[in-house]
Length: 175
Image 1 (cartoon, helix red, strand yellow):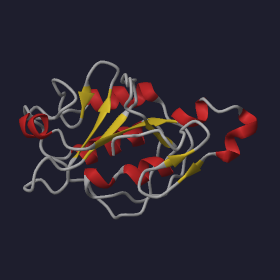
Image 2 (tube, one colour; image 1 turned 90 degrees about the vertical axis):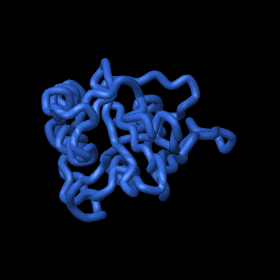
Image 3 (spheres, rainbow, N blue to C red; image 1 turned 120 degrees about the horizontal axis):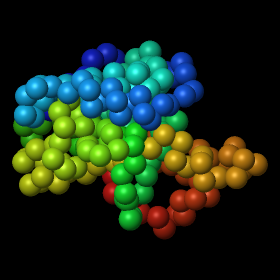
Image 4 (spheres, rainbow, N blue to C red; image 1 turned 135 degrees about the horizontal axis):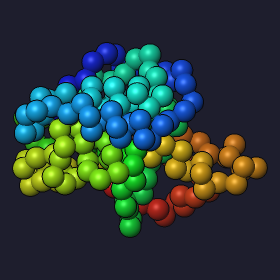
């Protein structure tokens, strides 16, 4: 379900994210096939481009996009009492041994969309049955809640972890 294009390094060359442009692109450019064409990472990447987030390089597999999204100023969103917002992006790990790329999808304000409009969060029956691990990312989510005089204390770490004063050591986030 998730073949992207490119290499495994990401570099941002822009600092804006237009959620409306993201939602419009991702919704307007879906496949006519019921479950898309297997290019969810490419489709979400192109929506990011349309929204002003430019990448010089990107991961091939959807499951590997977490670090790239963090580098683009997206933040991990705790799943406790989570409610989707326009522009959110979910990176889903593989659903079974046959799936090596996982899945990637964006929220357009109404539906989760990858390269097709999904009926719910899960992109298909195998994902729905197996419910693999996933992480939700939101542009600037952590920085929006930190007073401006403390923003320098936010650190992004390896393996999609965010350390800040907002997330205590006891905060558990499903990875």
